Image 1 (cartoon, one colour):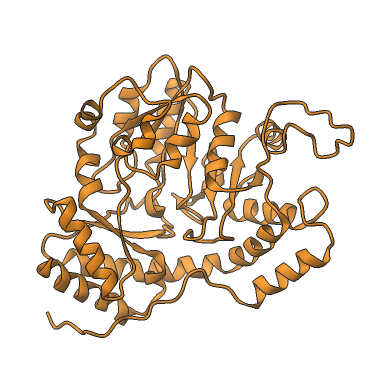
Image 2 (tube, helix red, strand yellow; image 1 turned 120 degrees about the vertical axis):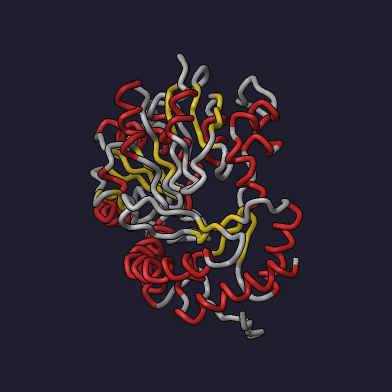
Length: 387
């Protein structure tokens, strides 16, 4: 393969223009910079909810708080267990653990890298209060099987949709899948205000309970400090909401471009000996592609890390995959199951392999040109042979 030594110049991230500037000025000049007096947060909730097919949307401070608040509304607390994929960012488990619950990691599908419904079913016990599928890299988890599991077991789902802005499953948007979903707007996400989050709810009473708890237990119209529940301050500010309204306005076009580029890059990566791209479940008929993930089965973790460093040196924004939850010291501080690391590893053989052999490329690469997709594949093939 002929390899260009040219460093590709991918689009920058985050992206912004005068739309964000105008939004920030609008928020500034309204004279009220928090959600109770301004209009930006409320407008963003309406627009984001409409885009995702959600009847009720609550904007919050960040994606971790979105998960924590959603779990609390579902009744998660001390004495509860929450089933989470073992391969995910640690907020998925910590949100449950911060509420006093036990996080129970289960294995993932080797192709989609999403939670394995069969593993989730085996983990259900008398204290299981929620199951949390994570839509890994924008690929929606098997929501058909998971919805049936939820209906049969009576255990509600909470979708960790931090990677899944704009995703669709068999024509249905995230807010139309019948379960609570939590989103993140952290700096690397598909739309961002640096930080921020949102929760979508299928039921009005869930939204009302969440609103109270995200505002220190205080109703929106309260003037007498009648705090009706416990809670915390998870309120989004007006400036973040103004930026996110602008970000939402360009999201759909960006997803369309990534959907054009991803099949080409996936095919090119799959043609490299030893490289296995994340597979796509075709029921996910709109994948926003938060990451372009690929595995190199059999590679050691040390060599994988050298590969990542070498790709970065060649101008490709690459990152090592998440560690298995149970291999992070923070997982064991509180709310861990009564199993050892090795016992959990034995139950999660796919995760054991994936966390050491997987690389992801920043989604801004998929906003590049077709030529740049070929450059990425050429650089990867060259670099993999050399590390």
